[in-house]
Image (tube, rainbow, N blue to C red):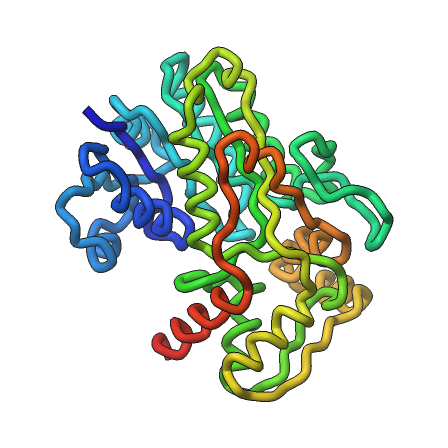
Length: 321
């Protein structure tokens, strides 16, 4: 008998990429997804091998049905920044429902939660040992969700990922880095564009999550204190990354970063701008990570370089226009 998996947020970019990865694995594995829209999921995944549980991730009865008799949960649910407080609510509910079972939860972390490192400060890249010290309200919510799962009685593995990009990734920060260059327009980014930064291709992000779920020893007693990994790719900048998009799309344009004072002013009149400001520290400061620990533990390394990843993403955006 294979492994019984559950993927929450399976209609999102990361959750969907995890499902694709699982479909390539052992045919004896059982795949279940927890989604709000069965129709939307089936449009992308008509494969009858996948069991669908439809419901609301914030309703205990629905969550209990979804997690029943599974071995591994990929908790990939994501909420809009304006409703980000639901992230912590869903994590606490998952802890309450799973209880003291041996279900292994794999949770995608990010770089928001770490202590701020000044650009070119000489500090080593972020690692699993880097201090968790979220500098904003939204980042604290993410850190508290991370902590709730890590301190739960069941085994949890948190994998901190760089900002991901690729087919299906259409968030407000990444989409303009493709949409506008493809249209031959300038890019105005809401943060500095010359600070070291990393991006990870969506397929590699999913592989990072599945690699730790399947690794030996996941269900050991040691994992009950929560394992933590960081995924490093190739340091770049928003400017260099976007220049590659222009080159791949064979268009021209300029990339310019907005000064902080302009966003502070906008935040006075827009709650949405205020919330976005709370995650921009990952672009104003160096958030590059090392992948040494996850490579040594489970052999994971990203496979997709920026040239190939950007080429495939540009093709997807052009096809979706």
